[in-house]
Image: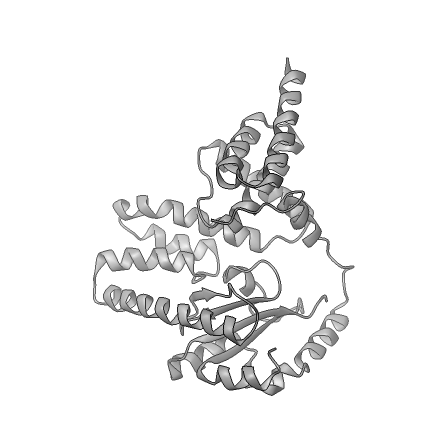
Length: 75
Length: 231
């Protein structure tokens, strides 16, 4: 059983985590997405970035999916 | 790590999927992180071919850690496959067990999707699945918080359930968020009943932890103040 309780309570961590950056314009979000898609790791191996395509590839091959969740809208 | 040859060589036996939450209008599956049990970045899991989560990264973010995650995932995927096959063959017990697993492993995109299948079950089966369904709704709610106002609203929802005698009974990671938001709401309206139930739950789950003990002591003192104000 996890016994830890964050200093100050997870409440503080949740509240900090919800502090959103200033609302970005759509074109700024699209530019950030393009920058993320250009990162080296996506070129070094055969990554799918479309969930439905990844599921189809897994169904076809019978392989498990290694899923890495990241974001582009904020650091 | 993900750009290394070591990772490329190890990962050849798997389908690699990178989900990027972009907040770009129109982009698909923007809630996928929450669906798959994540509430922060980065989040690494193994999925079986229909999308159910079969393992989460518990070790280091290196090939050894990934390999350990994959080994656990293979075993869980094999169990799920057996259930799927038995359920498809008409085994009622397997169908119920599979529904419970699907609640736990991010198989449903929304609570409404899960409830639709839940409502089609026999009453005797529903009784055993009410708690897993509630736990699933809490995990999804926590993973989809959008603002501090939304967090307060979620806390109010949790507090109402707690008042009605229901509460989250799943993993301790989610439990921390659940009870914290309920406390936050209870404090905002000085709800003694909910606060005292939160104190009892936090003590039971995290009572060995010094930070939790301080948190509980502080909340207990606040509740005593609220009670005095009401006299």
